[in-house]
Length: 129
Ligand SMILES: [Zn+2]
Ligand SMILES: [Zn+2]
Image (cartoon, protein in one colour):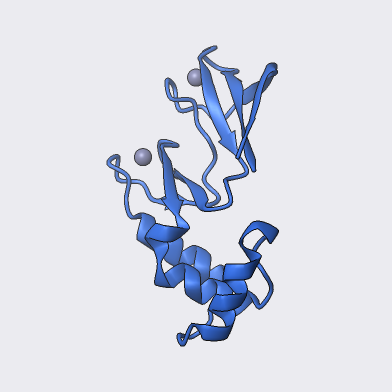
């Protein structure tokens, strides 16, 4: 489960939605230049995700535990560790139209001025699955 909250840019005052924590089945990557969001689902990742599940040896999370165990016992490919997985996911996500790269570590940016200074509006907070 992740959540959506409303952020307020400290530099220009723009309000925008911020998603955090990802979901059970997607990764949220951001462009390292403009902050554009790119959601990559485990389904899209296919083999890359299977290798990672095989590599971690324990269920990725409780909700997917049964299928993770199946993958660990039956997937014939080579397992990979988390660093390698992140590298492959970032490679898979490709380049943003601005020329930047989508990465796990890229900060969320204001859609108006690209500032990374923002504060959360505590009155706007939505949980989602
Ligand atoms: Zn970009
Ligand atoms: Zn701004």
